[in-house]
Image (tube, rainbow, N blue to C red; front, side):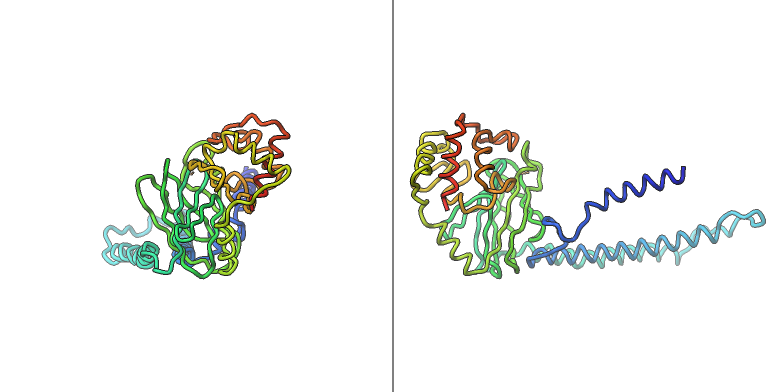
Length: 330
Ligand code: CUA
């Protein structure tokens, strides 16, 4: 019986701890912004407090179990009823612990709600079922699912919701913040290291909530400026197979929902003007390769359950041509 329990315990512990890692792409323990570091500092403080309390309580408990265990020759130990010093100490000690946790917590809550500094890059983030729209009003750039920001400069995200409640969460860059229809939330951070950071909608928002992912790509300032200039440029003019793909795009339902500047002006689906420069497809769930794109164009709901984009009824050859056009939009 004891061995059986031990085996089950070890099995459960192995499975549970197998999910733990400091270094996975969605780890909250690797902070890369001021915002994430502030939250991590509170998290570390609480964790250490909990460890100290657990050790002290377990030690006292073990001592009591040994010291007062039942023995034949020993009668009832002394019974205590009402002990002012004991009662004061076990009231004051937890209050002190709470105070030690509360002061930095409140400080971080206020620090992470401060208005953005004047030089912050403003980005409007709109959570849609099930993708992310990023608008840079000062740069005249609109993109989707991949947020590019410069390292070392404050970024102010204005979070808006056109449909249901979502939650913006990129663990290495900081805590979650809800995207609520009819309400404006803000998230301000300064990223310190160029790199690609994974994010995920963190509020259940329907069938493909789990497929509502994103990437935040932090670039060196010069690389960011180059990217913004490329994004502002008009869509690439296709030729050959890609031109046939463009014709398919222009005569299909695509134009009602998507924008490709100079070609269409839909507003309820991702802007595709520079789709070919994105690393991922379908809100960060697939690498942006011809094979994945063709599979997506042939049957979007098979890739992403509940997706608003319908199957367009394309033939395989048409899907190939359309994919060639879209991937050429750099
Ligand atoms: Cu959007 Cu969950």
